Amino acid sequence: MSEKSEKDKKAFQSYLDNIKAKTGKTPADFRALAKEKGLTKAGEIVAWLKKDFGLGYGHAGAIWQLIGHADDVKASPDDRLAKLFAGKKAVWRKAYDALGARVRRFGTDVQVAPNMTYINLCRGSKKFAIVQMTADRLDIGIKLKGVAPTEQFEAAGSWNAMVTHRVRISDPKQIDAEVLAWLRQAYDATKTELGELA
Image (spheres, rainbow, N blue to C red):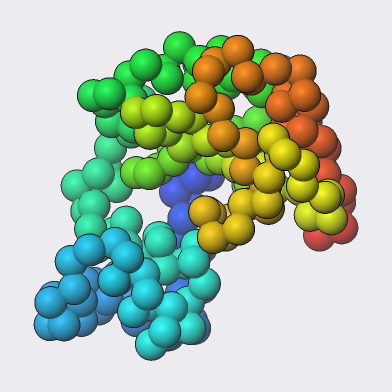
């Protein structure tokens, strides 16, 4: 197992440990409770976990992934990327690969971590952006607290609580210097957050 995948595994386990400390429940407990309640859809499971157990969106989403995608959790990052770009979303793979290559140039600590619904862009273990595809659009979520939204750099709103801003890309040419500057600013801001934690 590579050092990165071992680190990712430990980070995810820490996430699960925090959930257990807060709720007293393991993923297996949540799986059994969801089955008892007849809950199967992502939205209803996440809402239930947030309401009944006080979990935030990220923690509830992690449990949903373990409940709803037990087999997918074991998938390799390459397999997860392939699944994210399956079918009609395949048109965005080339644009994503180009974007990913440019973002990786920000620093050796850039980590690309695909999950079952989107791709996390992290500086070490701190997320600074996400990328999510539909057949028609590639959305880039950027975490930049305190930065006013613009027409293109809109507030994320309810789209994804893990980021503050959203850029909707309907043509790969829209992934321009301005979008990369926002991503770089978010990456740089993460260093400040990491420094404050030290």
